Image (tube, rainbow, N blue to C red; front, side, top):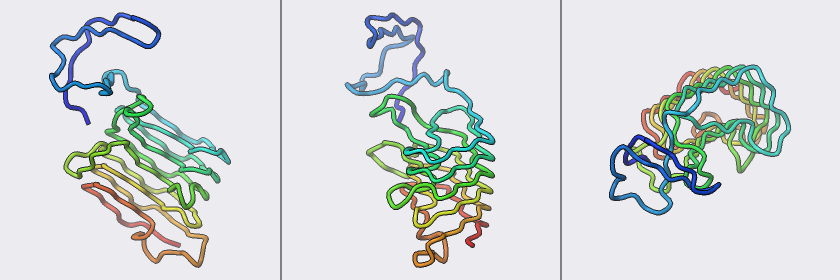
Length: 201
């Protein structure tokens, strides 16, 4: 989680891996080894539309940016891992921070994930989990078609303002078919969640 902000006045390259930053004000006293700096003014907006993601051993889309994200009218077919992963992997991969505005709508997820990987995974890497201190905000998952045998439909952590509605879900494993979404959705430290008007067929 962010604990301070600053402006960079000058960047000097010390080596291919090291940069010296000149800041507009002193660094905070609590800054520590392994803390991460993210350039929050240089994060892209993302639109991913009308694509096909099929039979790859990893997830279909990994997206984490503070800019507006729209993922719509795509086909995700038999991916071994999640169709969509929203991470926050500043701690280990040093790639990205949180999302603030994500729409996932009118996509088809055909047998993505499995027992170990949900169809849609929202998984920031925070180790301190508190619903009052969310990592991600404002994620809407609407109007999608999801076909799965036994994967969780949604697994979300540390998210405020999560909407999951008007999705059509079919479970092809008749033995494990849930009668509602309680067994197909897992939420950890989420708040402001709306799960409504979904159809299980």
